Image (tube, rainbow over all chains, first blue to last red; front, side, top):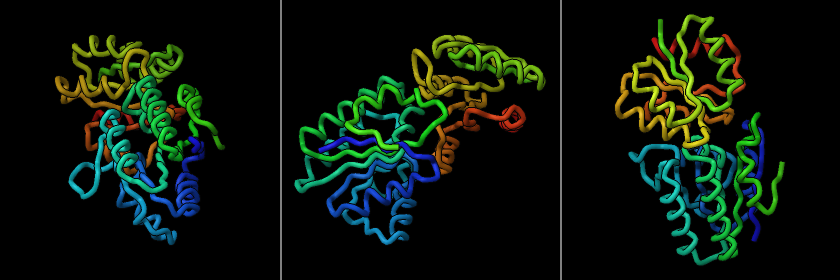
Amino acid sequence: MTATLIMTPAERVEDQITKVIANTHEKGVYVSLNKSQQSMEMFLRKKGIETENLFFIDCVTAEETEGIHIAPDNLPFLEKAIEFFMRDIKEKMYIIIDGLSTLLLYNSENAVAKFVKELIQDAAKQHIDLIAVSVITKEEELLNKIFNFFDEVKR
Amino acid sequence: MKKILYIEDHEDTAEAVKKILNQAGFSVDLAKTGVQGIKKAETAFDGILLDIMLPDMSGWDVFKKLKKSKEKTKYLLLSALPISSERMTELKRRGIADYITKPFKREDLVKRIKKALQ
């Protein structure tokens, strides 16, 4: 099990996500912080990637559409939802967090660091891979507290 | 003259933005922390610019607190974090007038603040 942070320019986020998902047949929990579930599913299907193995947690759109919607400023609830999937999916699985840095818009640096740390610890206990994708920013120190929790940071 | 409160902990950035906005005809007051910003916002401002990462609380928390009592004020977020267009739509739905990514061009900053405060 590894926790990987992929730092990428904004225009390459979707390619990075596609690469991660296309390379696995396991079930995945997709925490979407940048694009709605609907947009992401449409995008992946266009790329020829089936989405039936993906369980979306949509943190972008309001709750008027189907699926699981969690506001990005509600980190305890988001953590609980991910934990639920980790417990409920018995097969080998992975978690992907698309747009990790977006959490910093809504929460303090310390709250995001605590969330990431706990999530990585929980995933490690259950031998689940965690992949987070974050956009490269001009002020990378914004992510300083978060870098350290990952086993690997890819650029 | 439109009155703006800029809540930003980096003094250099705060002073630079204040200078730009003063030259563009705005009256600007500064606050270094969320708590200080909330206190200063007790007086009326047309617009509040918020840095997203403040030392004592997030800019979003400041926004949520102020929005309840200062509904007519326009709120703009300033951040180095790039966001998607869908995220921008969601921010606007929740009451953010604009989201300006740092570094910004002087003219762009003024133009967008003027537009938000119209």
